[in-house]
Length: 356
Image 1 (cartoon, rainbow, N blue to C red):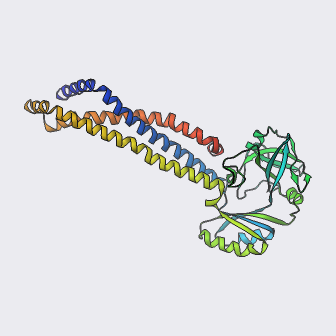
Image 2: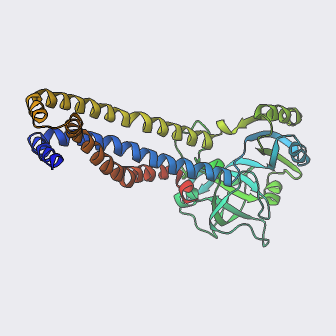
Image 3: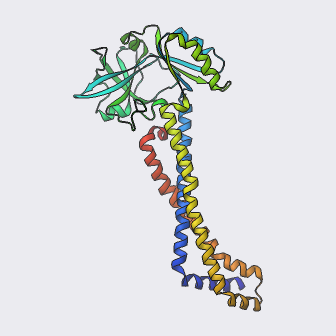
């Protein structure tokens, strides 16, 4: 009965300052909304992204050489700390599609499907068959942007000659989640640049790399520091025209994704805090003013036999209600609206991560 009378008084006080209460509540809702929304998007994006990189075995080291014998791949695989190594051939070439010039990166894949470093995930069509050698798998964005279709013939220009390749599937790889040619490009433009995967035996024949490779991807097992493994690899490859070794942290797709995750993490920690601080300051000022104006009423409560605890709980109802209502409303809006919107926006760039 005692607490009910105090609650009625609280409702009457709330009615007299409902505008101020709604303002404080809105600030709390916004703070909680951004915090839960950003955290929800962060957990979903980073969880799916790093799982995707691990599942498809993104390399820890990329080595580019002028030309090295295939046997060098086995030698590198015997280095302590190396879990898996894959040798391939690659070259950027020009292609003309419906009078529109573009650049495609030809990358070799094993003639028969097997687990490799920087593996691909098929999005449509199929892997290479034994029927013919002139088959290729293209990046899905490139196929869509250039209005290509499965079964269509494309003709990249290699050493001045047109090479006919039949599209049998579309795919995505962890090393080209962010599909740009190099760091000179700011954003992906699938209409002018794409990845074309070709049968290893066929591409080596086309590029005149029989028995050789010019690109080596290495996956480590964490037994040794990456710097030590890198030094050993350099010793082996320097005689074959080593042009550079890129670590995973510096690789375009992985670096871009990691930077976006870190930026989102910083934003989710800092930005909502501004609203929480603002709400705390407003509540403090409101409660201070309320208590100062109601000192006579507090004295009356004491005279009527109310305890200090009961009076304190009465005045704590205001911030508690703001916190509870703001947290519930902000969490619902944050997870189902802000978080989903953030994921949709990030998915425009990293859509394959969320689809697995």
